[in-house]
Length: 459
Ligand code: GLC
Image 1 (spheres, helix red, strand yellow):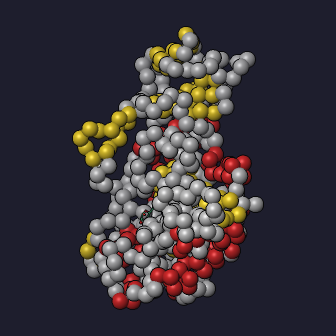
Image 2 (cartoon, protein in one colour):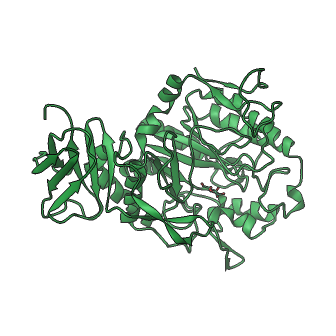
Image 3 (cartoon, protein in one colour):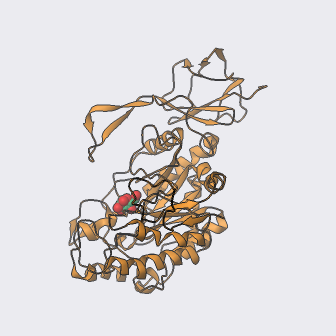
């Protein structure tokens, strides 16, 4: 069983330069074997559903008849809505259309293996029946149900993993909670340690106690307030779910299990690390009625493939409405990805990264994104994922006649299209490390057709 060390660093241990020696050591106490066993399902899963759902779906991006720029779940902060006024949205929050089993079916039809849902976002509103105070969906809304309990049951039945997002540092409702940009309402002022002790820690304890197996704990936006000592207050709770996977956003120097690049795909992945790109389907996490800037299914599917080819997971977000409905354009896109995975899933689930180095593109020498980061320009028309004895070549652009692949280590026994159930062989030649495949005239799939090069001996 994995345990956690949060005692002071003992004499003679290596002390990370950023953490003074009086600070707690924030890491899990487990062997590499135990760690690998704990991460196994997650590494094989590759594709998960992020759900940002909260009371912010009531204003849905509009305050006092004006569109509030930015992501929907930040509306309280962006529009500086007073605490008591924002809390009134709870009276209109009655998601009668919420059907946990239906949501789970949507995730499964998309080929997703896990779900991570917002249990409490920065607005401080608990989407579960917390006993800590009444600011939660069961006690403060006409809905009166506990959607996370219903989702936990539905996930259990369907055999899909469930995880919780919890905003441990920012909380714009409870006194003492942190707020990016500072408090804007006196009601927010208070003691951060009291907030941790009375709200955040007990709520995380509830989440890890009352909802059956919790596969993932997804913390977010730690500020400097989240010192190693404060972060350490959460660690004993993880023993309640010894197999739980925790992201890298608790703060205080806790590394966690997973890197979490947001809204982008790191060019070379994070070699040797577990990582997960989280991404919106449109431009917001929490529902905004006017955000219809949906990414195309093609782009989303190629993102999944690109991420898998770099050894990562894709946590793709939906933002349900205040009626409890996942918007149809999101459902459609997920379904299309799932249809592709039904045919081509072997080239994604449980696969490893490309066998062909990191030449898949370049940083634009001039352009920068809105965060000032260099923009990655993908160069290749194809990606590669790997399975035991197999190279999966994903063609985003169908090659003319012959596809030449250099740098193949091993001897190819057979080439076939993954979409071809009968695995009819495709002619190819191998000269040393170079393989030339005679490409059939018609691509099996307009977005990504997968060629399998079978390196198993004896084929
Ligand atoms: C950011 C935002 C947040 C969103 C998250 C998802 O950190 O604060 O609203 O939940 O990203 O990764």
